[in-house]
Amino acid sequence: MKINIILAGVGGQGILTIAAVIDTAALASNLNIKQSEVHGMSQRGGAVQSHVRISDKEVYSDLIPVGKADMIISVEPMELLRYLPFLKKDGLLVTDSNPFLNITIYPELEELYTEIKSYPNSILIDAQKIAKDLGNSRATNIVLLGAASHQLPLSDESLQQAIKTLFERKGEKIVAKNLEAFNAGKEIAKEIFSKKVVL
Image (cartoon, rainbow, N blue to C red):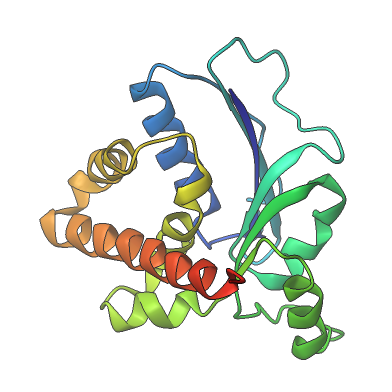
């Protein structure tokens, strides 16, 4: 078993947190993991990406080759498109629909959405609104992790325990809100894929 994940977004959107949850759950599941350096963190709003590789065998490189990513999880739709060359033919795309408008020539949103939806394995959701409705707008990244979780080689229990471990110092309320965000993402992904099934 091996899975390659690219995480993308901009500084301040919680890319490292997604990686930390996945890493913690993988280690608790006795799996091997390699994670690349995250770029762009020094600038809030700058592009950030990380490669995460999980396997039941030893992982020798932390970088994912072009065309070998099983999934891309992005907290920003345009950042998702930057990494499409890395995606496998049947790979999964998961992204928030909300743009981070930090450039003057940002593409038309409908064009972005059309490109993302052209991939059969895509989840384009307003994760920001879901998180806000749950009372924690900062949990957008955890909503997206929940939406991608059905294709991770990790149990819900291991991921939820990782969330508890990483957020426990912030208090029970924050832990609970992040668990709610994870479960909300999981449910919306299930709903999206149930509608895509052709009978």
